[in-house]
Length: 260
Image (tube, rainbow, N blue to C red; front, side):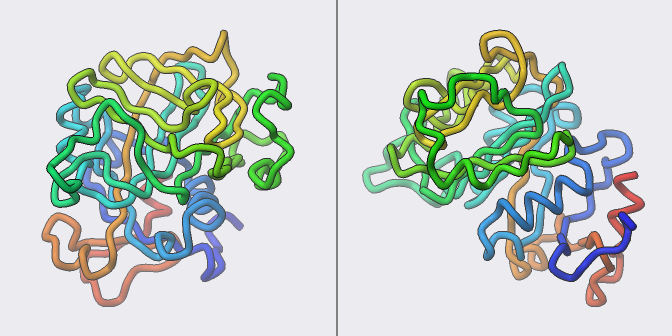
């Protein structure tokens, strides 16, 4: 029964008043899978906040950057015009904010990030030559091949390089993974992107398509906040759970009805 969940599958999400007008890319099953299988254990206990959506907030890169740059952990979710879903988890803020490097150096136009980052996709292109990026490592064992596009396939950091994240605020470009190709790279006001085999995550192209190029149908970023942070923020004071409402929050309601 899809609406019967184990406690291990519980996901806490901030109420999104625009969810009916602007439905999220991910299904309930995909959210649970990413939360349980993909995210680090500490992050899986945090609240999901849909900080940015192209459909809801417009296609301004500066708007996305402003809404997302100060979250320590984020999840980028992309839906292509062909219906494939791909993205990545980032464990380092996309912008400086209160996390400025010493000397106030900008993070744009150069790689940064940590080894907790990973990529995911629901329809990766496994027909590319796998030996080219060394798939015979631990990253490939995380993939569950059952042929369902509901199932997410995860690609962890290999340790080969530290090209986890890249963000060019002025150029309006954002991506993850490098070495051979970008794991994914989105540009031109969230209209076009590319994905190839990169050494950072030992992934195949994250979608089926022509030469790793894709058109972007929708682009979202989730930010993760602790319970204390969520309760202290007025905009996140109402939370929902996939399995049950949180007793201490008066306006909580079931996410299962929100996402159907």
